[in-house]
Length: 441
Image (cartoon, rainbow, N blue to C red; front, side):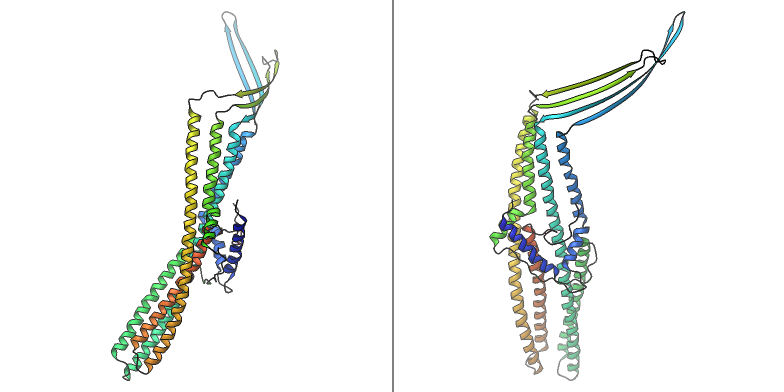
């Protein structure tokens, strides 16, 4: 069972996430729309849902051990006999026999059935948790693809603006060089920076196209214009809280735990093979034998039979005992896998937490850098007007400002991705919690 504190925390996650998903200008594809499309069309998720439906059938299959079986049989036979007597001639006889029977069998006791049903139920729960893990992976990939496109859109815009700025500066440098205020070196420096900026913009265009292709692969449609979401997550307040939630609620941990429980019921099922079983069977039949074809010697026979059968295995060559030992060892293996999965989920939460903290610190640092770089650039431009600073000084400072802005865009993307990763590690990144339309399983 999940502690109530974690349930409350999960509700807070969902409330905060809803604020983030809803933030988008009119007409732009929102993050929630992208996640909904991915959840509705992703083939990996569809395959896992089909697998769950298949595993669901193991429950009625196991329940069949409680239920009766009934069979009906109808038979028609025709017998033609031609007997020849020496010196007398021949005699030909023909009979047409008919029969009908119904047989029913009801298990009374079988020690393997109850454990088989419980095992099937746990396997279904394990597969549901696996489906949730797959759903989280798909949604996380979709969110990451969305944020990658948004990031690269902004980088293209920054580089495009930088190219336009340097084009104006090159023209101004050429004009001032003609009147003797700048040298050919100054013009060459401006020209070089413009060429570098054009190359950076082309590289940004290529990276954006790559991000768009990744978006299409995951979401299933072209991204168009995407709106940058505004982070409004309500995440765990401490790393310890995040770690505990990840260990208790991560779907991969739940899947491993259910699989372990299913294996323990499998031990009981194997042990049940060494116990007695009992069944009740009943049958009724009727047969018609008209004898000859003229109707002479016509007979009809009715039969009713009921039987209770108890079967007690005495010695089975040591097979069931070996199967029990094998099942116990496998259960031990599953137990270790559950522990390892718990450790991995905690590691994922810690990693996401560290990435989130680092991204937030970087955002604060880059904003300070931008503010300081802008102030320095304003001062350098004024000093360059009176000749106390060179054009190269201004170009270098503009590049530093651009680098800080690019770094800020990357850090903002990293912050939101890390928040999604933390949600996934804690088992909170599901279609239900995100308010997406539930896809039928």
